[in-house]
Image (tube, rainbow, N blue to C red; front, side, top):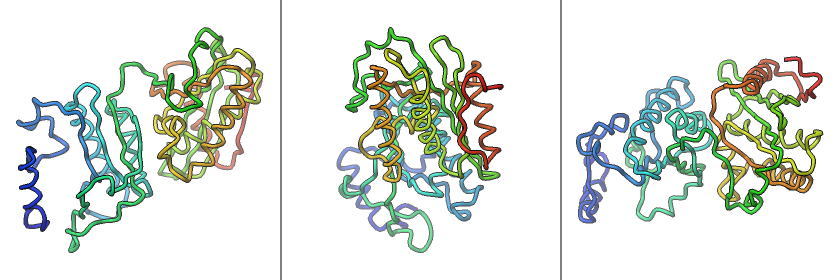
Length: 339
């Protein structure tokens, strides 16, 4: 039991009740929306620190990863039903392999949840909090929480596209008078395969008349899908900068299928250190392009299915990128698309 396993459990339970907290035991995170004491209640914030499905093998075992993903997916499915309007779901999780392969953002997206913020976890921010192991002879001992982040999710708005309009970051906080200008967009998409291990990304540049002007594709070594998506955004900016569409009075949308990548671009704080150089390149390219087109660039998250011609092209080309691992980065102008 909880009291027999953790030596401070009894005093912690007493203190919680003295402070007015309601303490429930044996609540299944995968089915909690049907719990008789929870199903009629709504919460401002639901927190799950370091979710784990149990110890049945090595953490990098694909079957174990699937078990963990199943737990988190079902938790998301239940937690979103218990949120108030504008409520949030917080999950604290390790960000290095093999834990990064759980793909929390994808699991959230499958439950119509959107990543609002991702911040580094520091146990000193939570006085009296002590993390504990869940198994083994050292079960009452803490585990290493470094390289962890708290992922904060909200229920996805009805709009299929979440843009960075009026964002507080300095080089994105721009007036929106450019909405009446000709708009072009660069749709990017990354894909990562685990069996066999491969990755790649693709992009399609579309002009204001909805005509495909260029295609970008590149294979990558196996990596996190959100990092691959960030690299796709960086390449899209460089390619647009070289294109004939990079001219005065054009408004540009960069459309990504990773809300985490968009969040990294928007934020100046809490981003993974290993992405610093790429984010700096994106910021510099942003400033160069903005000075030329005289309009801010909108970085958008879109989880749309492949519903139009350009989405289909992106889908087809990023599959080619993954399958051709020895292919260099390729940029096809309009006259050479042939797809």
